[in-house]
Length: 321
Image 1 (tube, one colour):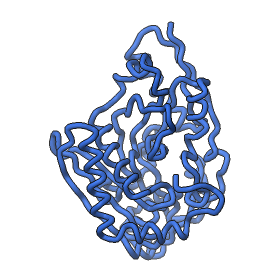
Image 2 (cartoon, rainbow, N blue to C red):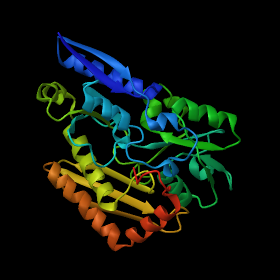
Image 3 (cartoon, helix red, strand yellow):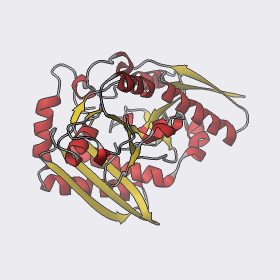
């Protein structure tokens, strides 16, 4: 009997994700005993400030990765979008599971879609990426910050006077809340965060036996799309302090399409571009992300990012996540 410990955050969604990975491992292999260990992260403790103001790398993953490196847990399950673009030395992603719906979802009080909200409507979100795309679609909207886990954000929305809230569709569906969705926002138009909808299984790089156990959970197309998205993020120097979205998908076999977006905080400067290329392996996908980053930079992305960072980067609290 092989005993394993999964490190996870304690939110309902994080626990669902960890249990889901546990069930997948148990289904793939006999003779496993898998326990969950809840680890509170800095992002779980700091609930009031906007993520762009809190700063720091790995705000939702750092403490879990420390436990992994120390051997207190054997593997960690993360929402891929929460992982910083660079992993700590000694850790690797053993699996990126098949991506669920990457889209963002609008929940409105009176079931109106985004284009039907009244002029000057208030929409809640904790994401700069969502904020700028909302303003790009509807400059008249009032976008206000919102923090907390999925259930907390829904409760805060219900208790507010806001007209709508935007959350990740995958999280809502995983928690059995898909019927709350008013409108699925097309991810090719309203770009998700890098890796949104995908789960990452992280292990120590020297744990070859565990890497083999996790192999059945890995999904090649999701890994390649995520590699392109994260390469774009890295090329742009992005993180939670930069309104940057990316969406990679295979619209034809072997051909990866990657769309990227960056904007300033009021969306008055909004860049969006798309590239398509072969993705026979992870390196080809990475190169596609780098290529798109170069295109966006040639259009003025670096100037936009510098402007945003001058407004969002907190003093004495670390760099971009």
